[in-house]
Amino acid sequence: MGGSLPNLVLLVTISSPARVKLSPLEWRVLRLVTLGCNRRQIAGLLDQTVEAVGRCQVDLKRKAQATTLRALARWARQMAICPPDDRLSTLERARLCSFEQPIESVL
Image (cartoon, rainbow, N blue to C red; front, top):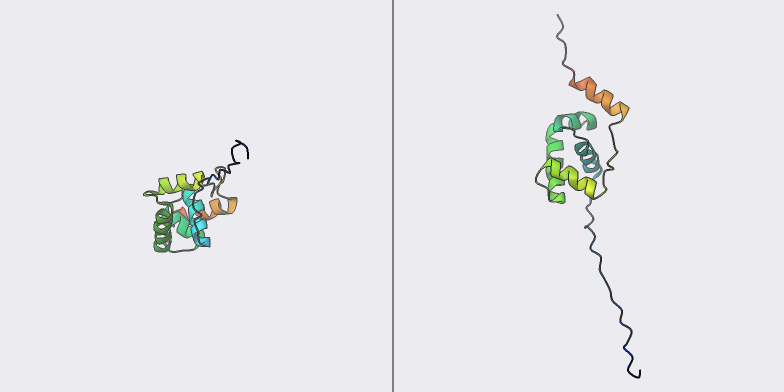
């Protein structure tokens, strides 16, 4: 040893965000939230009820510790869960247009 310092091993823990487990429905709802869709639009696209989508959004906000949908979308982008360049597909846009148009009354 003769006066030399012992080799020190420094263990550094890099803090990474905790993994969040999401159901398949939560993944789809989160993606559509980040794209700016509202509950009614999400329900129509995913063939779910508005209430089911609302419950899913509440669960997502709880998991992300977010108070608003905007904060939830920001969290999803920061966590790289939803890519920033993601867009609605042509089929999704067509479905949105089909159920958002007013129904014409039959005379």
